Image 1 (spheres, helix red, strand yellow):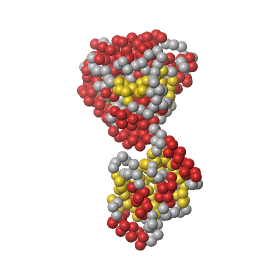
Image 2 (cartoon, one colour):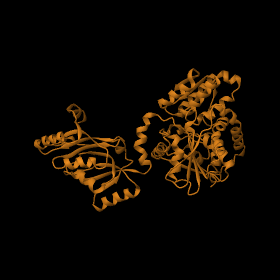
Image 3 (cartoon, rainbow, N blue to C red):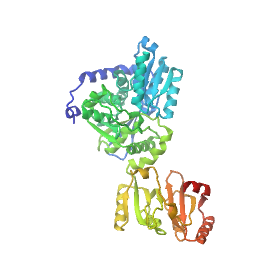
Image 4 (cartoon, rainbow, N blue to C red):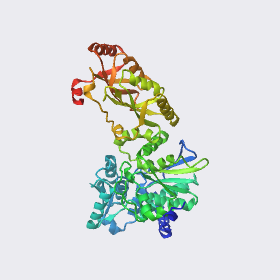
Length: 513
């Protein structure tokens, strides 16, 4: 369906023609600096063929250099003398830095204070002595506001990240490469949206050469500034923007990009951060590519919709791979949730010796347990949280088993206490506790074997385990005993068993309790 008709927005043929010409003119300038990036066909569990435009392999590991360099190459000698200024969450800044170094222009680059360190380092590396980095504000919009003010004060030329014809022209050259690849025609393209520059330019070019292509704009759930513009019939500022996908964290889309997107996009969808993580994992598994969150957003949208359909071709742009290393842990934890392979359940069972083991045997036999959170909070009832990785049919089987056995449970996958691993416990309920850090082979049944061996003498009063991807698993276990003799006997059992463990020092327990 034509979104222009839906939202009563007239066609903007003049803007579209201008952007098309800018892309044509940008070719020579862009290819003087960087070679075309490849188009990869990957295997994904969806219907149809999936192609990826690998902008992560560009000179700055992002498509942003195309627009920044193209705009800067058009500066007059007098403008070059004054220098340039920009605001960016990272990738556009690298493009401006690259352009400044290649063209011999000084640049001031404003970046949010939350910008990942690796992007700051990359800007400095690409720009060298030509670039001065200023960290300002908590987000792109705050940095941009200050950069605009300094541009007015200093006379430097502001290089916009998206709302500029020449910038869009440079960004659109990636679509030219798609057409020239010979892999088309494509039936659908999934384009991530921040300010809308890439989506507008790429849509303009693809629709000219593939008139029947369907363009799907993809936004983060709490980054949907283009959807807000569509609803309001004009660009409007969002009150809040999530910054996990920092490259698309823009509160307000461009005045030039909005009418083009309104005319050219056939659909707008949103994806969750977890769905983006699942796309990042697929890229790693397929191409050993570690895309940054915004870079995988288009693929996340494609996966969410199940692909283009049998016999059809879909295109997604891996628009960046400037991932901050510290984000990898969060991505790894949430990828299986986004791919609907992981769930977390909270149970209500009896606070009896062996009850946790019985739960594992009755509901999770043969399945991959990825997390265990439990602390004793009641003398009669226990409320463990178990994370499990499985297929949708297996999840149905688990839940049916529990209903048949009368085990009370709830899905707590997205609950904050589970997300932040808040494990409640009542220390006064622990009877002769003994805490250990247990190491066991990370294989199905290994932890079960330990619990089975311990069941006769010990009860679990605290259990903290999460899968880390290593060959061994590590759990912090608290066990309690009815008598000192049982406690001493259990220690002797551990000393003679094959389990690797360390006792938790009393000073550590004092801090915990």
